[in-house]
Length: 147
Image 1 (cartoon, rainbow, N blue to C red):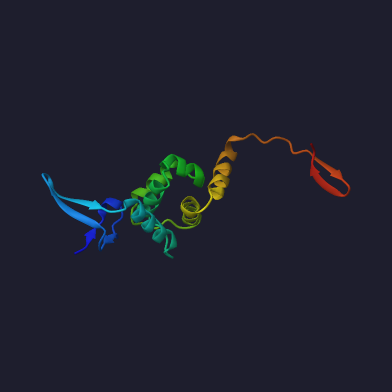
Image 2: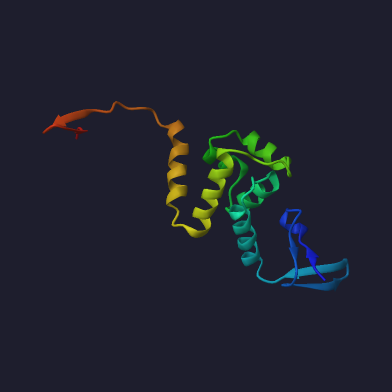
């Protein structure tokens, strides 16, 4: 017997074991052993599978990274409404740079030291910073930022 893990928000997750079905006053209940490990395995499969991430998978990864739709939109350089549309269109693939950046962000979140996320966060903030003059000085045939 297997269990269709709909609670993940994904339509294609089936568990062969690692769960217990028990009776409750409200009907059958399910307990899953090591939910954190299960979600890490699901996310790793999403980012490693060589097909475009769809809206449901984007939502799953966003929640695993503990990001709001607004924050993910800022990181991706997109409108919050775009993230909502992608997530709402559950089965529709998300093509191009968003797919690639989301995979890289998740890998950095789950396995990395956070440097990619810090860099992307910094890039997202660039819209808020006023451009200041860049003053350069030529010293011994090399250009350098003036002190």
